[in-house]
Image (tube, rainbow, N blue to C red; front, side, top):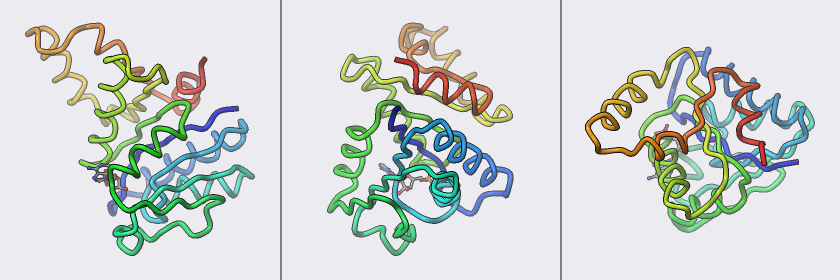
Length: 178
Ligand code: AMP
């Protein structure tokens, strides 16, 4: 069984996205995987963790002390790690995970996606980095990256290091493949 770190939104997004996060939490837990997340109980992060626990799964939340109020620290988490800095949060989230799945999100989510992805193609880790392109949410970004590859700014090899999934089961399959 694996520990999968899920990056997703912390903002006031539509119900469809909360449902998606819950679907991912349920599916991971049902398959026996641990969910590693940013340790907030709001928005998609909250929906993910609550659904995973409701399905009998285990959750690990990692949150900086300064965000405990703003992101509503997930006190129900099986393990809640409070860090002093954002860098430490990211380091621990990365360390604790065997694979990564990025769901729809904002700037924080994108930052986390790019950091784990670049770490992967630079050979700093060999964990699967998966992007769940739910209903073409990331199509504009993927199109732009393709254009950057055509212009020589991004290598095809780097692009191929990102595993793009169009469904929850595929995302979990990719993230848990060893
Ligand atoms: P967002 O996608 O902007 O809604 O943010 C999703 C999550 O990413 C939240 O838990 C944020 O605290 C977190 N986040 C925001 N900025 C950063 C950053 N620079 N590094 C790591 N996580 C971040």
